Image (cartoon, rainbow, N blue to C red):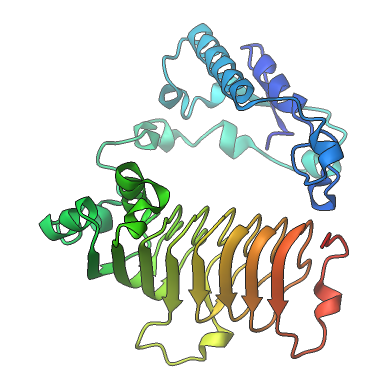
Length: 338
């Protein structure tokens, strides 16, 4: 879409130039990032002279330019821009074979019945929230809050649906603010939270020490994303009659960017398991493509089949793959750096 839709006379060009300036060399998996960002090589890392403050300033400037451009167009917020397709036009005479066959008329000229686009805006009563699991009195009750305030062992079981996303994240944030990343566990606190059903995306994301989440059912993508501690266990529902090892129980990109904690799944994972993992321990019974991609630390055990491109750009950590079919070497990336 970005290659086909272009800025018109309204002035979006300068913003697009910023994005185009961030040219991707597309060698992240080779550990040879020429600007020293996505690499572990010290000689290349030395090329990156930036600081976190530079990044903050960049986004401040970007936000300022967006506000100025919106003011020029007569809009006060991003929400007001939703559905204003007259501000966009499709580029013509592109020397790109795939782009020449793309028809964006349905996007640029919505049907008459869709002229009222208020439903696209954010509503205070939006349907998808974390409310049911994390705000309900069944979890944030007096005993639960006491267990957080004065670290102790607390156990709770509740149901979950795929509308409940990032379950456990708000609790982890509460613990971190009160006790630090490890303080709750070090003071004797443990939260044993069990769920039954299908979890939405990012189940157990940003989990910290002292939290144990057990899911009886299945989960969507991004399980254990950026977790730093704690434990996640995913098991089939008690009514499941199939063979767990032959069925997917958690989605894509799980344990992404984790630097601690444990994740155990009685079933297989989707694609990109443990991408950029730097410290978590993972055990699953199978995985899709790109397992352990860009991994720098931690340990991953796959007790079954894996997809192609295993370990692409991997520069650290340990991966144990059960190769009963004797075809693992065909699936391993040739760019593994360990």
